[in-house]
Image 1 (cartoon, rainbow, N blue to C red):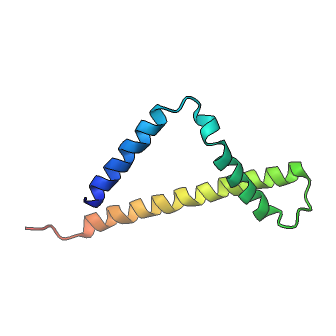
Image 2: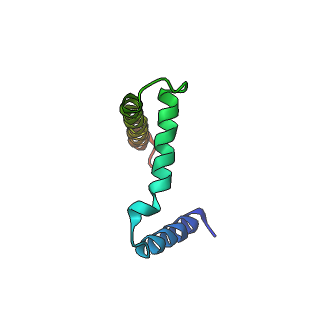
Image 3: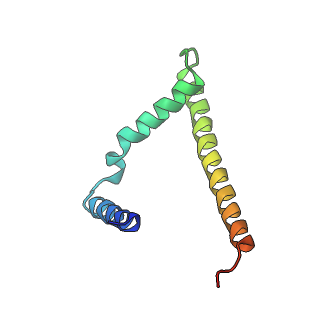
Length: 91
């Protein structure tokens, strides 16, 4: 099986699974809670902040994380476009 076929097979399975899911929010609740706990641990490793302040900072840490991912993806797309422009045309 080629990598492309594996990707399509995985996508098919994911869509089939989500089609059978009655409550998507509850299905992902544990993962969202674990992710937020990770960010809370990063911003308050010693547990000295109030819960409200820890949550506020964790939300900003989460936004910064995803903003960083978006920046990296945009940079990669730009580099790929530039590479296509400078690549020699195959005969």
